Length: 316
Image 1 (cartoon, rainbow, N blue to C red):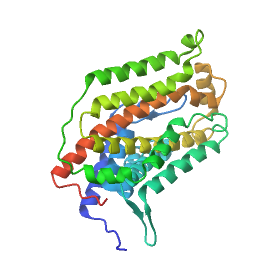
Image 2: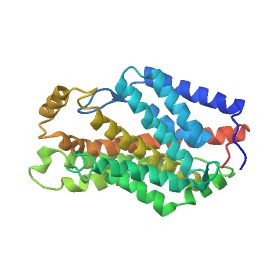
Image 3: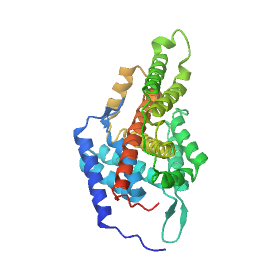
Image 4: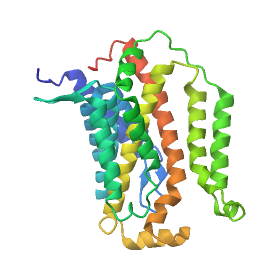
């Protein structure tokens, strides 16, 4: 097996993407972490693109370096690993094989193993053992990987060179998806639940709304390519999210004071720490679907542009 050599182009891509992460982290407002400190930065949506364009290893480094440079605390240094693992998972899913000096295995198998380990890690915490249903969207990503297998990398390899590049936005589907998401948020609120106990159906509705919105954005375009980019991005963002959860739990008492958590629980009228995760689950689903849509939209456009310009040279 030939040894991989880092080219000048590879170094340039890593530097550009690391700089992009730094700019997004420093100058683009993020989403506040409910019950925690800091923000979820929109570089989370950029990390899957790094894996798509320059692969799992260089994508990992680009996201990691950008996060390290922008970090201003020990907690933010640790969470830099989240975007890095997202880029790695996406890169592995869109690459046929993961190779080392002596072994070669399908990329999707390694990606599935990473996400599975993170989910198992959740259930090994005391929080996870009391919030058993929290990893539903993460398990959905794992099931998607296991169900599609080599399909993602095969379609990514074949479809990126396709001639049909028309992008047709369907506004009625986008509006319908937003309406479904708003409805699911309304029925999940306590003031509504006091009359009818139907909040359990809010989570499936979030998924449905997200699917309808994604179809409205991309359903009229290059179907195969958009589907592979979107699915790979979602799985990467789920790995990012679960690793962030584990870092958050492990940081309580170290980088996040217990008093801060107690005050957050009191403000939200929640009984304990595990209930905080279940409280924010619907919000997290909407957030991850939105980040998936952003990553898909920019990822598809960037890859087509790079390929047309003769700059997409990633080995698949």
